[in-house]
Image (cartoon, rainbow, N blue to C red; front, side, top):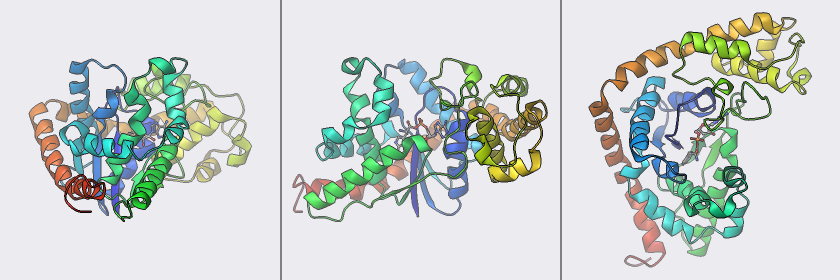
Length: 332
Ligand code: TYM
């Protein structure tokens, strides 16, 4: 299994990133060939202060290591150090169809009413994402639910390229979307996903939040007055309650039904403190490691630069293959 996945280095890592993606990357790095990267070329699709971006890349590299990514096991790097990514993205831009990109819901959400004022990069970024994955012949892409459409697009681009140029260059990747934790919702609105771009910090748990902040956010999380039922089906119309049970289950690696089996009949007055404690205990060692690593930017740069070297070497044969297939370099 060759596993590739990435994350944008904007703002803080939150619980959705952790449960939807990172926790699974950490498990997979022991069994698979893993390439994990900070998508800094994605981060510039909206305006971002350059100094802030540079700091975010280091901070997020540190956060991934604190979560358990081991740069000796997984190749950890940032996009911008590996020019094969934008190079391959250009080649794939010429295969991807405008009609396909027009269907991307994330572009619609992110550009909002100001579609004409959005950058071309924001529109085309799913193609860069395709380059990210196809360059490494990824077989599996572990992501949260919100990335599913982008992975399907990657398969369409790979199929069209292989067919148009009569090659078997690209491997078709499978999205790996976890059963529990693939869509963690906001603590303030059970119908909106937990997100870095939500204006309210109370809507998310950041991996850097201290114990008191976590406890306060859980205490203030929107819920309802009903006790917890016996089955998840009975939570169908109670999105906030369903979300908290899902978070509890994903943190403990259990089924939500199992968590309900233990807590059915309890109200949130009892369930919330149990959840807060679980969160604090899970995040405490991550935060402690993060504080340690943050103190050594030179070591983080060394790790990212070593990772970029390995990534560039792994990407080159596929990039060369794409140039050859297009008649841009040597024979096909
Ligand atoms: P990004 O930075 O928005 O999110 C990183 C990962 O976290 C997952 N995630 C969630 N999972 C569950 N619940 C949530 N509320 C939640 N919020 C975020 C995302 O699904 C993702 O797996 N375009 C990507 C980065 C990227 C990428 C790639 C991913 C660039 N190239 C190639 C995979 C393969 C993004 O913006 O993720």
